[in-house]
Amino acid sequence: MQNEQNQTESPVEGDFGTKTGALVKLGLITVGTQIATEVVHRVARYPLVVFGLGVAAGVYAHKERKKIIRTARQLQHQGKNLLPFDK
Image 1 (spheres, rainbow, N blue to C red):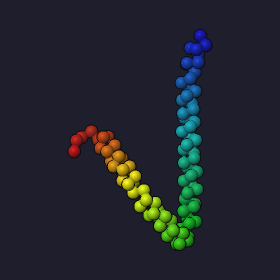
Image 2: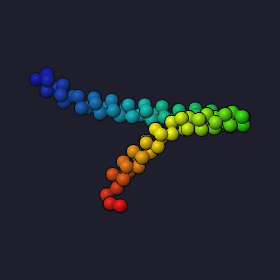
Image 3: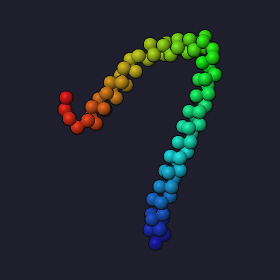
Image 4: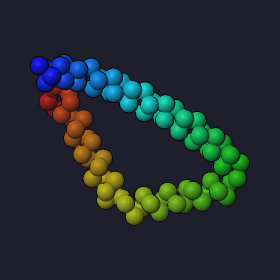
């Protein structure tokens, strides 16, 4: 009897937890976006910092280029699998 009650209550609690978790994630993304926007606006005032960030991004992209290309190809194949028609 108790096992049956626990089984019926579990999906309700699981749905509530999932919805709450999604709301928390959405809130964190919103706050993170606002903080990132503020940081970009402040950094954009200093051209040397922007140049340095560009150099750092270029160095990282050059260092990780094989991994970036591999990931892009995987995403390309996954996208092709989503489309119903053959090419």
